[in-house]
Length: 474
Image (cartoon, rainbow, N blue to C red; front, side, top):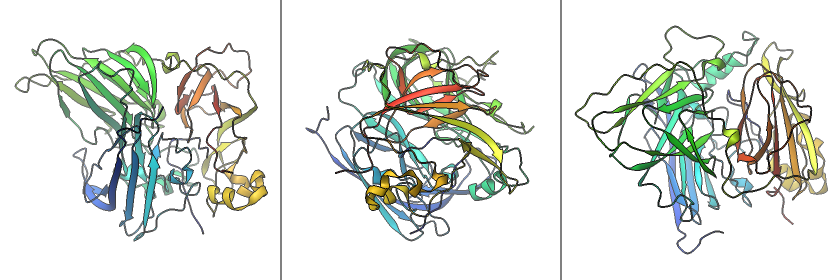
């Protein structure tokens, strides 16, 4: 049984009070097909849709529900999968949707059923986790409602706002040119546009004097985005499924895969409409094409008869520091660490002349047999990391242990790191150019938590979590 996987442009770290009174069984039937789309108005291209439509539908559920997603792959020329980004899948690791890790890819003409319980509220997204495929369109919002939300009754309406980069080229071609001897510096493909809700010039009708919870999700492949609403202040109340104490922000930065929920209260009059902006982080781009518009504009529309004003220029990007957020549950620092290891990040060239990403001098190669299948079928040998293959860079963890990961970024670019099946406590995050972690920090008593963190250029971050989501059961 063989599988293959190619990472997308973002560098992702991958480790492999329920209320049942009103629980529901929710079923989605998804036929994954090719459609045509032109969201930036500049280029019509083949795009991966669901049930003949794109943008693809949101998945919505409530804590306590059971979700079934029946997938039919009718692409014809590509394999696929679906990953439900941020859902821990505790007890159902085989539903995580990562080809080469928890399953084989779904061949053309074949089907796969994902079936799992919803045990956590918050803002998530789902996407293909196969051959860097999702930027071709197979990505959408996944929203889990919470009857016990600490912010229940504090807002009038929910809105979903996705942001993403957009490419005119298709991923198979872009990946071939990206990891190629002709690109020895590893310069990532530059997006052709930025999108809000898979379109441009988005208008959002609002009413005066109301409070909206806006669930923001960066479903992009590569570019982080700065987001702000002119004339309005955001109050952050959730990140990556973790409720936080309210924190006011004028501007937020979302790396690829990060999510924020904010409360935004509208003005008490309807005398003007207001722009809101997304600006791609151009520090990530090796070159800036002269034709690129790195921004996308939307509008809060109080009165449809009034003009949509041009967005104002900003002097600098000064986003809110997510490291200062405090989870509402008050989870204290995991102070006693059972197992600590370093992941030193570097970009380098191999003998083929192409540029690759490395953890501790090892670049990932997908195994022929998914890692989970090996763990479940090799008995006591599953505790020997070598059976998973040197280039999977496997670490064996004991259930219940507190794990500390020290990520040292020896690269001049910022990178997001995502943990499957858990969220991290971030106990240290250095400034840019601080170098490797040296262990002389004071840790917060109640650390910030989320499942996707940014490590700064030539910087470090120290992350902790409890290994409570095993891939093997007695």
